[in-house]
Length: 261
Image 1 (cartoon, helix red, strand yellow):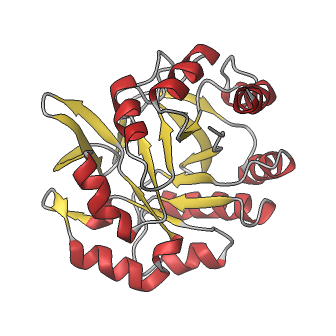
Image 2: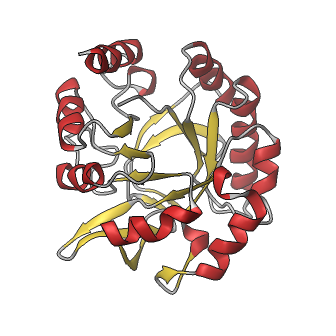
C-alpha cells in the first residue's frame, strides 16, 4: 500500500471539504483552506517522490471559478510534471488540455453516467480521445441498503450502478485504474469504510486507490488488512499539511516500513 497524494481545488484555492457537503452553489463544511497555491503542493509532493496522486477541480465546469481551479491545477502540474492525474469536469473536449499540461491521466465520473447508468457511448468516446492508458474512472460511492451506490455531480446524485465485482469487471477494459472515495466518511477522519475496503481488496483486476475516513495510523492498519494490502490510499484532512494530526513524512515512513515487514 502506498500513499497517493491529493490536491482538491475549490474557487481556485487548495481546500479539504467534507464529502457530500459540496453543492453547485456553495459548500456545507470546509475542513481546511490553504494559504499556499497549487505550485507549493506540487513541489512538495515532487520532492518526496509521491507520484500517482490526483488533483480534483471541485467547481462546476464552465464557471468562472472552474477556470480559477484550472489555473491552480496547472501550477501544480508545472511544479511536478508527470506527478498527477486530474479530475473534475472532464469531457472529451477538454481532456487533452490537462494531458498536455502534464497530467498522466484524466479522472472521470459524471460524464460517463447519464440517467443514472453508464453511458457506454460516452465512455467509448473518452477512450478514443485519450486512450485507456490515460483514463481513470472515479467510482466514488455512498452506502445504501443495497450496497455501495456510485455517486456523481459532486456526490449529490446517486446512480443505479453499484460497486460490485461485476461492475468492476465490466469497466476494467476502459480504465487504467480506479479511484474510489467512500463518500459517507470522506473528510470526517473517524475511520474508514471497512466493508468497502474488503470488497475492493477481494477484487484484484486493476490498481485501486481508496480514499475516505483515514484519521490515524490505526486506520491505515485496518485498511491494509481489509484491503489485503492491494489498495493504495489517499489521505486528505487528517494530514498535517492540511491542518490534521498525521505528519506527512511519518505516514510515508509508516507505509514503507509496513511494506518491508
